[in-house]
Image (cartoon, rainbow, N blue to C red; front, side):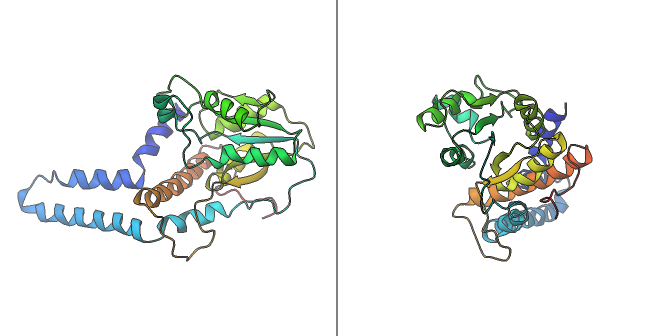
Length: 267
């Protein structure tokens, strides 16, 4: 039930969805004499949406998330395994087109191509089934398998965890699948903004991993005037950041992570 509620709530608390919904609702103001108030509400909402497009709102929201766990300046001499969180495949488009369609998180799938050159004996795991409330006819791994084979990443030794539907299940099911031994070093590959929540979840599960953030969407510094090239990207960055902040709060309140904003060890 948590999965279903989280998906519905995630849609409803989306900043863009909330603003557009409020604007639409205001058009049904019952008293004709108060229609001017409705008009002012719509003006306010349009002003907020415009500011989200021309001001670096997304960048300011993403920076704290993406800089929380820095990429290792120097990787360990030995890495026993690499965990890649799913979420880089657009399930709907892939099903419609019949071939792999990758979204803005594509770097998650590309990272192992270079990492396995440095650690050819590391075990590779892709974790994630379908995150949709209405799963399609295939899982993400169905499209990633041939992609990684063509990229000379999968020689038949890659593990695919296909049952998890969210980040919490990613951590639990992956731990149970690989059964990590004490002293082993595992890299966790996911989007930089998603890393704080992911690290909190893996720690809670008892699986000690090393963060390897990818797919950065901010400049990495607050106060920089950075406006994405398209309205979709600008609003998408805000949506991604809000999704993570809400996710952190919900996972903390439900006991799925121990810290509201997980930090590197010793911080």
